[in-house]
Length: 381
Image (cartoon, rainbow, N blue to C red):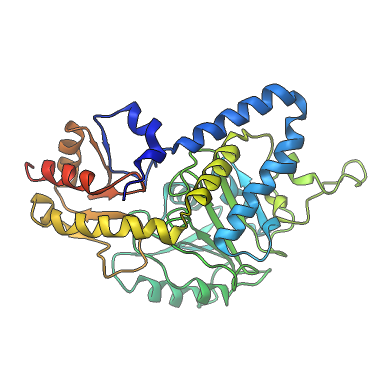
């Protein structure tokens, strides 16, 4: 079965391109175009009053979609921002610690890796990382987390470099306390790629993700689930965080009582429109995460098997099919990865590179024809 018709605009824009990086920049489905247009039309029609609709209808609709996907007990714990970096900085500012002790892995995504390294360099945090280079990472990470030595513990649910899944969120949640440690899970490579159930830990775990990858909504629509009672007054704050506290005396800094206490200032709401439009499309098509994976997983398996017969078969597959659940990409580690990526790019095949790891990611817009296309080119490398 093919779902290419849902992506006719993006595929038609570059018909000679084979985009095999759905884990990185996911092609936008046609529904996102309609969402973008609706954002423009509302801005034109409503002008200054567009924010009444954004905050009164568009924002709550997006919250509801996410709460349903993550099985959260309430949608009001969700707050939006243009990127996860903004939300990450705001969470750290809310800890109340002058030099918080932070535990993380050494394989986190750029938004955390760069900022945490700079914080450590400036002596603003005390940072310890656990190496992700072995299959027992989850156990080693949990052992350090249980030491009681940390104020904030940050880890990806799915590692962006290897595609391996951290399976200890419930164990981390058991450690969480409003006065520390706080647990922050980066779910960017998990949200809408694997089934995520936060129902039993939502009262103790922060969760960060966004629409750029598997949610297929593009940039500018990132979110944070903030557990009640954790970080009630972030120091890094914007005026959208004060909506529910307008009765305060002049000079006092008020905060919303729900997840919006982590809100920033004025933002571009078009990402929320695109996100809602894509979610509506998925519901019309009857496409849950499980159903999308039922289409994509066999393609990943077929791709991995067929690449074994090409030069890429010499690479170390960091996330084999035996690791379930997994991200929607193959992570191929080899000293030849950069050369392969360059050769594929010359054939108008888009993949991406992280160090010596070539990542090949699939989405709804792929089918067996695309597997044959890639493998055919790979046989010439």
